[in-house]
Image (cartoon, rainbow, N blue to C red):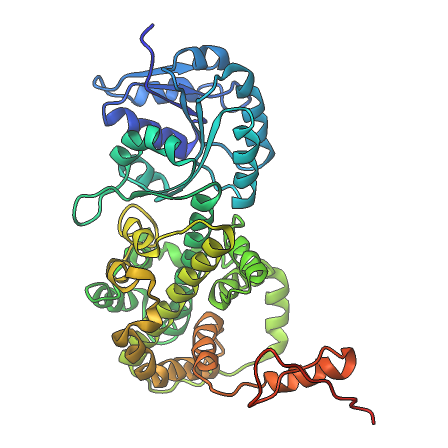
Length: 465
């Protein structure tokens, strides 16, 4: 039997698509899927999809699968994160040899990836955590790949990964070595957090505009925006969604307003709290999905609210500028979280390079991400770019106009508000935290700092005397 250059375990939607992508790029491939109820035909189904040019061997026996791979073995696991992944790793370890490489391409929590890297290092097996973005189509045609783990192990798999990845405008692969241990999954987690907020901004715009315009008219407006610096994949698919019909009905109008989530957005918010990194827009978008899940309660409470809508004149241009404003803040908060996570874990993540691999293959690819490659060079942030600071300053009136429109139409636009509130706070010389400091000192003797004194000097007042 001819040995395969690469192996894939797990032939769900993503695993199958990546497998076909790998084989299509000329790499000999072995695939494995367990035999379980509902999964009996997954191996044969994949083999039926291969072309004559593809070299794919299929297995339902794990030992035979391992025996079919060249050394060092390179095995990509595409299954549900968590305990199921640990079970597969435990089953693999007795069959592997020193220097073999296990790659987790699922949405694992970065802290779990860090632990797995350490555990497998002790067993002389390399473990790589790879964030994969792009959905089914991206996995098949060219995803964005964020790789974390041992650098030497990455060099062993880079030929395959760089071949299957999407390509940036210069033809370079949208794949990079992010850093050690859990860094790849950390960056993918933040990617998903940015994605949550980008989706919610469009949802809030839609909620505002549908009181004034038809689906087709909103789509035409978004088409105009998509031809500007606001262009991007999420705006593009939203245009398609708005105009898709089933019979005489727009499909969007028939869909229940109850959004799901898989956890990565909330992970970003939790990690931001741990790191002291502000990501209010991501958190707002996560909570918006949570609130949507209380459909029956919302329906009942809406009957007693008895709100009147006040339709006022407004400028479409103001909404466009408000959208641009909010997107800058969202990306700022996202990349700030990556920077803080990198510093905390000593990863040395290059944010400009992350932006580059997010210009194609991934869900948040956009014209703004393309520009971000330059914006974020040499460790800069968006707030250090004069043009972006000017856009934020000049857009304040426009985002206030959008927030007013939301209030008058009884439409929740909290993610937009989170963007404005963050900018407002960050550009305020004096906040109300002096009162917080006094309160903490009053009930807990936590002390406080004083204006005009060194920052390392603290004071305490006996407030009851």
